[in-house]
Length: 389
Image (cartoon, rainbow, N blue to C red; front, side, top):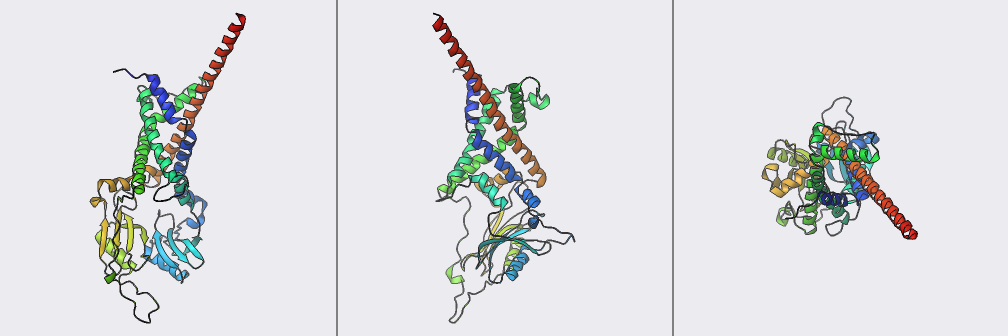
C-alpha cells in the first residue's frame, strides 16, 4: 500500500480549513458571543437584572404568572422561562394590543421591570449562530444545515492538523512562540500552539455539531426523538352548558401541577413551562435536576389539567440513547456545565478557535502569494532567456 505523503495531508488540511474561512470565522465568533449572551444582556439591560437588595427568597413561577395576569387582566399568559438567578424570569403572554410579549418579572420582588415585544438579544444571537437567520420551512432551515456541516470540516481539520504536526504533544510541555523570526513563523507558531491547546475544545465542538446535523436530518424527515404527549380524550373535557359564556376552568391548577411535578421528581427545578393552549391540551413542564451534564430541559412532564394525571414524564434515568445525546449536547456546546466559570472557559477557547481560522487563512494567503510571485519570476526569466536566444 502506497504511503500517503505529509504534503498531501498538509494540502488537505488547508483545503478543508481555509477556503471557507469567512463563514467558519463568523459562526465561531457568533457562537462565542452566544455563550455569554445572558451575561451580556445583564450588562447592557438593567431591566433584565434580578436585583435583590433585601435578600428575599425567589417566588415560585406560578406567582409570577399571576403578577402578569393582574397587570394585564385581558391577557392570556402562555408560559414562563426561568434563567440564571441574576436574570429576571420571562413570562410570555398575548393581549389585544400585544400579539406576543415577554414580561421581565423580578422573581424576588415580583415587579414587572420591562415588556419586550420583539426579539431578545439572547434569542437573536442563538438564531444568528444556529441557522444564520435563514427561514425555517417544512421542518428544516438551509442555514441550520450550513452551520452543522461546518462540524465535518472542523473534524477533518483537527485530524489532518494532528497528522501534519508531528509530535504535537511537545507543545504541552515546551510551547514555542518565536516572535522575531518573521510573520510566517509567528503565524505558524500561533496556529500550532492554539490548535494543540484547543484539541479538546475542537473535538467537543465537532462532535456536538455532528449531533446537531443528525438532529436536523431527523427533524427534516419528521422523526421524533422525543414523543409528544397525547391529546386529552374528548370525554374528559367538561361540556359547556346552555347559556354559559366562558369555557370551563381546569380542575387542576397550575400550582397543583407544579406540586405534582415535585412529587414525581423531588429535585425538579422548572426552567420552561407552558399552560394549555386549548381545552384538550396539557400543562407542559420542563426543568433541570441534579445532573451536571444535562441541559435545563432534561426533566419533562405533561399533566392533564382535568384529572391531574401525569400523561408522560421523562428524566435522565429513563432516556434513550438518542434522547441523552439531545440533552447533553447544549451544555457541552455552550459551556453551561458549571455556570459562569465554564462559560468563561468556553468563551476564551471560542476566541482562540476564531483566531485559528484567521491565522490559518493568513498562512494560506501568504503561501499562495509567494507561490504566485515565484511563478511570475520564473515566467519573466523564461521570457528573458527566450529573447536572448
